[in-house]
Amino acid sequence: MTDDEQTPRVATATRAIAAPAEALFELIADPSEQPRWDGNDNLAEAAPGQRVRAVGDVFVMTTSKGNVRENHVVEFEEGRRIAWRPAEPGAEPPGHLWRWELSPLGPDATEVTHTYDWTELRDEQRLPRARATTADRLMASMDRLAELAEQG
Image: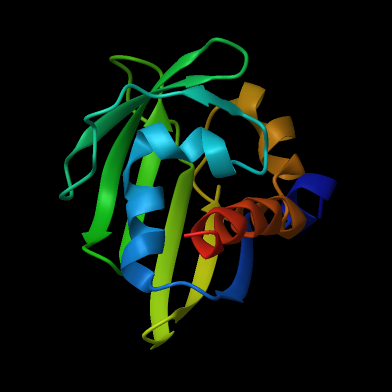
C-alpha cells in the first residue's frame, strides 16, 4: 500500500452547539455567511442573495487566494442537511464534497456533523490540500460557527 492509499479520504467532526438547528442552518446555507466561520481560512467572500434552497442550486464563492468556485449542491434537506461539490467555473466538479448534517438535541441545542469527503477526487493538484483537510480543520469551522450562533 502506498502512503496515499493509507490516507483516510473522509474527515468528519461532530459537536453539540447551543443554538437551534434553524439558526445554524441559516449560517451554513447562506454562502455570504460562510467566510465568517470558515476554519480553513480558505473563503474570502460570496455575493449576498445566494441562499441555497434545493439540490441543483449552484452558489459562487471567491477563495482567499482569489480563485472563483462554483459550488454544486448535491444534497439538501432544509434545516437538516446540505452538501456541495466545488468546481472551477464552467467545469465539472473534480470529486470532493463538503457536507453539514444537523440533528436537534432540543429547542436550543443541535448536534452538528461536518464532513469533507475526497474519495472521488480526481485532480492530482488538489490532493495535498485534501490530505491537509483533517478533522481538526473541520472542528475549527464548527467552533467558529458555534461562536457566531451562540452569540445570537
